[in-house]
Image 1 (cartoon, chains in turn red, purple):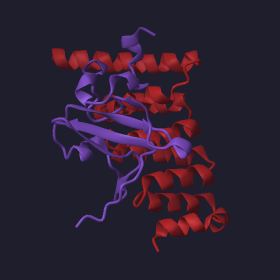
Image 2: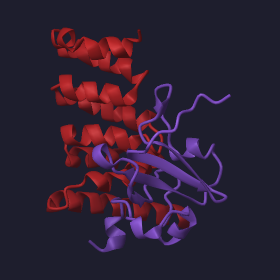
Image 3: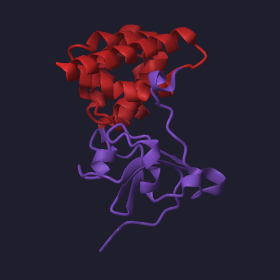
Image 4: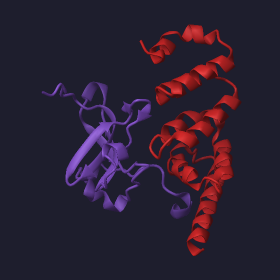
Length: 137
Length: 104
C-alpha cells in the first residue's frame, strides 16, 4: 500500500498530529500526488504560513498546466490579493513563472471585486511594460 | 494485445489535435506525481489546437457539453478554433482573457 493511501485512510490519525506534522505529511504527499496533497492541505491545515509556503513551491515546480491546480486550491486559502502580491514580487527575477500563473489566474478572479480586478490589471500592465522594454532593449 | 477498455466519457478531458487526429486524456490523469498536460499529450510536438472537453456526467454520460481553448502550454487563440476538428457550436473561450486586452 502506498503512503498516499495510508494518508487518505488515516485522516483521524492525521487530525491528531500537530499542524507542522500535518504540513510535513502534505509535503511528503506532494512528491507522489499533487492533487491529493493539495486536497489534504485544504482539509487539515489552518495557518496561512503553510499555504504561503505551498504557493512558493507551486510556482517553483509546476509547469504551465499544473500551476492551475495549485492556484485552484491555494487562491481560496490565501486570497487573490496575496497571490497577486507574491507574483508581483517575483516579476523581475522570475517572469516566466509569473507568466505561467497569470494565464490561469483570471479563472479564479472574483469579477465583482473591483479591488481584486484592479490589482490583477495593474500586474498585467507591469508585465506588458516589462515585455515592451525587454523587446526594445 | 491491448488491455484498454472502452468507456463512456464524463467529466473534463484535455485534448490536442495533431494532423487531424484528436488525442484526449482525463484532465486529472497523472504520470507519477505530475499531471499529464497538453504538452505531454502532444509528446512535446506542435499541435493544430489544444484545449479541454467537458462531457456530461452521471445520468447522461458521453455527451459533449462544451469545449474550450484552455491550455497553459499552447495558449491557442480563439480565432484558430476551427483547427481543433471539433464542432464549433460547442466552443466556449476559456475564462482567462487578459483584462487589459478586454478593456475591463
